[in-house]
Image (cartoon, rainbow, N blue to C red):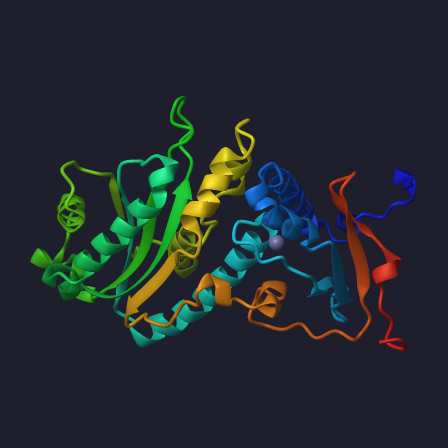
Length: 331
Ligand SMILES: [Zn+2]
């Protein structure tokens, strides 16, 4: 039906939109896996309908395409929807962090990663619940409250790659802690080994889990940009996918891990904030379609003209489709 030579791909006109092809192709693969099990066909169907066409406006200044209209399926683990949500979330955090730094200029950031022993994927939900309870206990300790004034925290689940552990899960917390300027002085300072102790105690564990702590400490020998880059990297790490598409699509297990992850994480909140940062983050499911379309805070104005692209499964790419064009006269 289509002759490749006559097709114009989205990436021909906007090379930076390559990620649309990649994420939409992942969504195709995920729909196939969902459709292997009757219980999950409803997700497969919705994902199949996700972002089938994209309508762009044209930025009058730079001639660049600006995304204006898409239908999102909003399935939690849909690769396209997850990607758009994480872009938006990062933009929100970047913006708010600047305000916070202005308000608390001498405060510092600590980047904490907390883990537990990998449970089998069928025990993931109860493990995450225990971790949430452990976190609550830890943040109420005097020691924590004495140095930390606010936090933002996300949950991430990865899939162990080791042979024989493919049906396990590796849940962990990424937390950005806003600490007082005195944190690095004397007894205020919490060493890595003490963070481990605090987490063990709060979780009531009988083993030492992996705990990683990094100070996002401005370095006087570095430029402002380099110092900001360290903080931005921490934000990137904290607000990436909650479950990597490649983990859900990997292995020849007919979608078994994906199906179980879907059940286990159903309606579990994966982000939280507190202290002076309370209210900074929006729950994932409250991010609107509009916010997933224009993922940055600044709105780029265009006229009513729309250039349409549709996803072509046979090519796993978006292709120019004048059927979806809109002209000002007809708008
Ligand atoms: Zn989607």
